[in-house]
Each structure stands twice: as structure tokens, then as C-alpha cells.
Amino acid sequence: MQTHEIKNGCEYVVGDASEVLEEYREAAAVTFLDDAWASPQRVKRLEAIYDTHPFNERIGSQNDSAPDESTSVEILDACYDSLTEGGWLVSDAQDWVAPHLLNYLVRKWGDASQSHENYEGGGYRKLGGVTFLCENGEPSDQTKGTFLTRGGYLVIFAHKGPTDRKTDVPARQLVRQKCIQNDKYDWMSIKPIEPYVNWIEGLVDPGELILVPCAGTAPAALAAERVFGDDARYVCIDNNEQAFEAFKRRRENEL
Image (cartoon, rainbow, N blue to C red):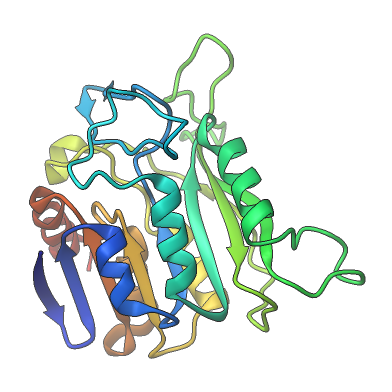
């Protein structure tokens, strides 16, 4: 495990997400998760090689290759423990993992998508996402497939217990930007910053901690710096030193 100080209150840790999150129990206002879990055997996609976690001990693949040997469920449990009461999980997802993730959140965290008049607890709250738009305003067909085109990625929102963190920021965001920019930062997939700016403005106050496990180039952390400047506080975590190097290049370029 190696900790890189970005600036006062902001760090990037190269290490196991589950282990690092244990150091931040009940500390984060929001945890932004982007685990490489899109599907079993996602070894190559868009000419990128991903280390992937099995979802749990039963669901996954022998080709899942993350060096830390964690499962996605173990990381989710660590995310729950990292949140303050009322804190939010904002988790990127894809088609394969979404039903597994939603089912797990409803069973373990609760179902906050019920009518607010009848339910005051926590759990899964909203299914959102990011849609990439072409220059003509149409959804991107970049994520081509035989059975429809995704045009972006899903984002799942949940909170720990009852919450006073409320916002009317849309769970679905539109972005005029392609996702993949391998040549720019020498990293696999680069997600846009703008949606995370909007969600942070809605859910986080200045000086509050956000955690970014499985960070990659960490758009949520960069969004926090855009929103709060010197009052931003974040800890990014990734098991790949190259992810940190890509984050540094992106931060220098985009901030």
C-alpha cells in the first residue's frame, strides 16, 4: 500500500480497496464506486485489458483477474461501513452487474425507492446514468452491440439509513463527450467529470470527505476540486500504480 498526497486533504492510495476503506469507517459523505465488474470474463474490451472482480463467491468467472482477490460484494460492504449515517453510495454499473447490484442493495441496505410517505429508511434509491451525445445531439452509438446500443453507462444511487442529503439534481446526465480517450492519458476508459460535479454539488458540503474506490482517473475527485477548490477532501483508491499516474496526468490537464 502506498499513499500519494495530492494536496492538503486529498490523497490517492495504491492498494486494496476493501482494506483501505476499513480505515475510513463512518467517515464519508459520499462514496463513488467504479469497480471493474461489467460482466464475467470481461478481459478485453475496446482494446483495453481490465482486472476484474467476481461479484461474489458464486457469480463471476475464473478469468476475473484483479490482484487483490476481493469480490465486488466485499467492496460494497466496505463502502457501506465507510459512509456516515445518511451518506450516499454512487456506483457506476453496466448491463450485467446492474440486476445483481440492485438485488444486493435492496436485500442488504433496504429499498428506499418506495414511496417516501411509507418508508423512512435507507437503501437503493434511484437508477440513473450518463448518456454520451454526438455533435448532432443524438445518443452516441460508441458502445455498439448486437442487441441495442447502450450509449453510456448506468449509475446506481443508494444511501445508508435515513438521509437529510436531498437534491433535485437529475440522476441521469447528458454529456457531449466520448468515454474512451486512451491516447490522451494512457489509461483505459476516461469517464467525464461534469456529471460528478452536479452530483457533488447536490449531495456534498464543503470540507466533507468523499471516497473513490476503484478510482482509475477519478472523475469524482476532480469534480470535488472543481466544486470546492481548497475545501475539497477526497481519498482515491486503486490497486494499479498506473491508474495513479494516469490520474496525475488528467488532473494536471483538466484542473
